[in-house]
Image 1 (cartoon, helix red, strand yellow):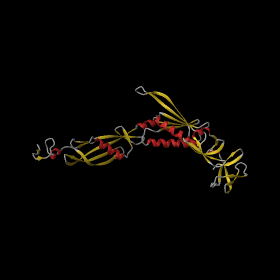
Image 2 (cartoon, helix red, strand yellow):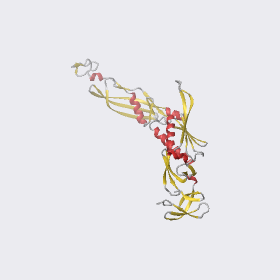
Image 3 (cartoon, one colour):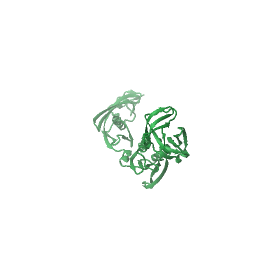
Image 4 (cartoon, helix red, strand yellow):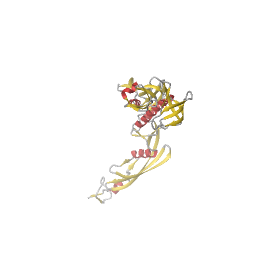
Length: 342
């Protein structure tokens, strides 16, 4: 059994020779500085803690900043507490922390307050974005012709979705800018690995020709060479929906990927596989956007009658089994004979 040197009472536990009550008397258990500064990115709105940036509500960020600033006296353990956040203006908050403390089995409470000042800054990723930072360029080109607006928009949408998905776990990944150039489009990217993954993805999706080339742009502070990578994706002339020549047959291209493709023969409407090795040998006959549109006059079983789009004569066309012709259909002339493109 111990006794308190201050009040003289016997006590089971003592701190610095005193009972817990005497030790607590007049002692501040939790302390806070007058103020703490909380940095927020003026561009994306994320908050900085220990040199890392986090997206959160401003009240949560203010509370976190206050909690990180509190100092608890040695020998005490926080077992519970409450936080009161009071907004003074958009950039100044007062935070009061009510702490429940355990000191050698004795539970007590203490209160401390701090002013949290929000200071604007710019996080590293946003600084790079605003500064047009890039380390790789994705060059998207077509075969022997200019990239059509439709295909360009389709590819760019795929690129933007892929970058957005990858950026969910890494804010350093972003598109710096997109630039229309003769023959296609250039996409400037923040990461070499991002450019490489996009090149691979587009190459597989469109069975496209791909190529990469490095360019030395300087050295790092420790003398290491710095490179920028250019990734070329040359899309084939043909695309899904186009009429192509495959093995001497005229077909509508249904699907294309890194594994090959599928095509519909316009002579007998049989669907066939196109091997990956045969993809480069496909020849474009007519783009989907250039197909002629014809009005359907009548329907009868496996045939329909249309009005010729050029001379307005009635023409009978075979149709696939089970095909329900709309009021207008797409047709393509092959050796002066019209064929349906379903």
